[in-house]
Length: 493
Image 1 (cartoon, rainbow, N blue to C red):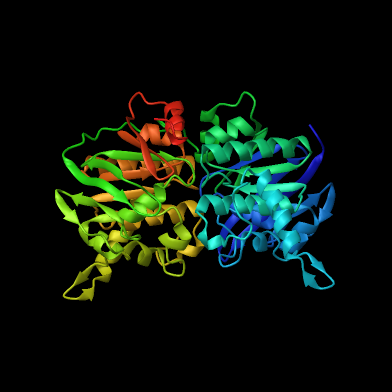
Image 2: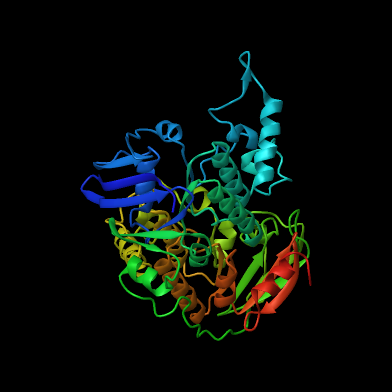
């Protein structure tokens, strides 16, 4: 294997009295894809933020190319050839794609911005990641989460980094975009780039990576070669135990139709028909831009339909606002947890209580609120030292579980889940799957959008596949294959 690009030795970091990293070692070689793994809150993001100059370590040494390095800011990291693709999108919404790609590195001639040259170069970078049709002049705020993720990838590539950190890069991508990214990663590896790959998707780790390092509770557990490695050993290193099954057994027996949708249409989806029974999980699959999220937003009153009807327990619904949807008994776990799912500067308790604050005689019942919040924090294994902690301070996976807890507090009749396990570790995913199954057993009708085909197949009773705003297939999950889903997702029937 090639020479060491980056080494970190004895890294310590605490936030106040809470230790986050305790003597962690990490090494990245030239021309390798190295998986960095661990449960949410294990310290992965903190370690990478130290490497990219966003945090200063309390102790420890960093070497780049064998020489001691002081990385005190993101600018220092960039000078050392280190770039990161953030899990939480780091783009400026009201700027164009090209403006984001060149932010802080604008092309000028005699002091005048060269807009044409920047747009032309942006097109080249976008084409390299398969986004030929995305205009460099498009405002980022008009893009889907998946498109924004691809812009983040293009932004990192533009730096021509020797060390590239990818934090959950495929979390918002579909199979097609993921395949394009994988081809690019293999090309970069061939050219000697070292890639740190942070992901909870086990298929990706085994398909793509050369080695993996595992952190647990802020400590370094070990490093392994991927060749010959078993999944059970990885799980045991991460969580200190094996999982009984990756996808828990489903016991719910669907009852009568709870949610019925007929001819639902707007600017993004056309003539959608389906129903979901009480106790049923209806999976929704499709490629980026297929209209899956737009459909969920219509059902939750975030968008206005042009045509169609929605019935809940046989009664017509006029869902013009989310407040009406919540009053009818609907919950929505959005794919954009930071932008739409949480209020980051409120506490964990306050976020869980947002849809419906416990009250008595018109006054907030703080005792009931704390009791219910504590129950849900324990039920979903949300790792936080205090329910009064701001949600901003939680890891990405624990933020995702907080969004789920918020809607469980509502005890909904229908729960819309848009990428519910995005950015959640394998142990956390198993917990969310268990919660989904328990909700189904209680008679909740669940609509689950996911880009992970194994997840859709394992967790659904039936699967609706969408392509360019239309439904192309409605399949029984039992017996369906990934190939059938992809065929329908690309327009086949």
